[in-house]
Length: 586
Image 1 (cartoon, helix red, strand yellow):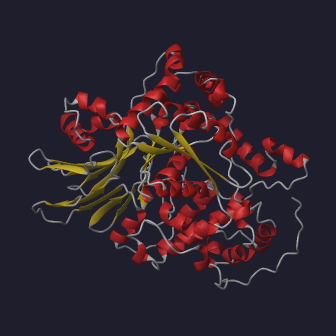
Image 2 (image 1 turned 135 degrees about the vertical axis):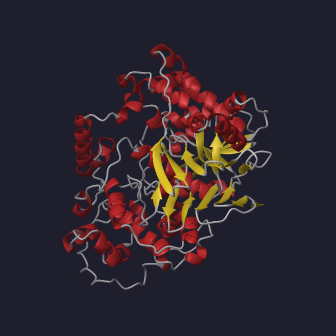
Image 3 (image 1 turned 180 degrees about the vertical axis):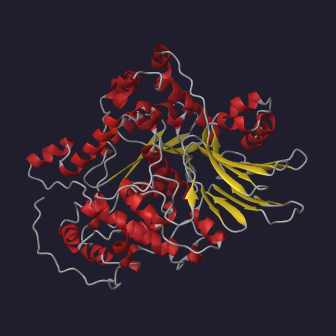
């Protein structure tokens, strides 16, 4: 897996460097860098040059490595970490925005005793956690490793928990679920001055180039193809995995991938029992060359894997699609694939105007969110006509009434959680994801279109349909990434009853009264998402805060099932009276 662990100890004496197996210790700096090895030669973890006064480490990938080699006149075999060091020595801090890809980098200037830790503009595929103790600063992209090395008392950050529940998917600030531990937001950089014992977080200014509308329309689709080609060469493997749906993004990506040098492409489509794209995606997959299509449906018993999901995501992100990602990662592991291409971030990248901060847009979004909670989606209306039971995901009033403790201006919550959902998961399995839609050129071209053309990717979808032709175009449709998890919660009433009466849940949501709990238990399918979210938070507290499972912190996965936690455990308050039986017509 990709792992970057940095310790800056300002009380440590200056000693000779110790270098061994991806680990370096020199004076106040201890660095451990581990990268997923792909291609013919292993990736270089870090570079240390005492004479030139530079130490640099990186994880992830730099996509514009060829351009950087030309800029510093390096050989065609120069590693990305060497190029980062060379650029810093040549240009200093202004060189950081030149890097593209999905990465986390660390640069230590031995002369000034200053350190810089930064990520790509999209926040990389894994978070960067940081913590200050009495004598040192700790930085790591794994919460498990940070907790193991931290040596500090742990406490659940209940304010962050409520923010987590409010946003539904991620904590919308620098906070984490552990008090005292923070995370770096996309577009930010940490600067540590060891002499002054000062840590500062700054924004990285990246230049966005605007081109003419005609050029943008001409080059938008081809820019994605060039990014696929660039990342394919960077991967250096004969076989890859790729996500495939019946949507525009994954099919355009698959079209370009099928033209590359890969011997075999394993396309994977995962779905729920009621909502999935397997049939339409299979029709699309049959058109491409060198593509083997694997499908799977999330099994009825997959809720029992939630402790492992919490362990791997480390409380960073929650979304019902995690069950699909878990299934996807297991398939790639069984197939022995180390590289996967994903269409994640495409919607956000190709519609840059959606973050416009107009007051009426914010009010409209609030109104839309309330309507979504109460009205059956129109695309599901046919089920009503057939008198089938419709479940619209609900949250109890105690959660709906929450308000964020802090809102970060310009923070793209949706883009961040989408990338973290896949990135954190695949990294825990030792799989390197590549994101062809996150190319900076593609973003600059998209923002050169007008807002009407970008809205719902109107121009892009028409261009893709024309580019792919009718053979593929007839199968393209957009379901919207809907995932059904109601069936995962069937027969789990006793489990959720015990969950809702745990002291932890009562402390987090004091407004969750017995009437609301009763309502949730009487209609578990409708409240499935909120119940599983609360279960996720309960498990995080058990796994990471209590210290009961510290002996497993070195393990990427967790082998205990859900039954080992709440089943058989007495509730900390009296169990609610059983609800009267209800008949559901399917």
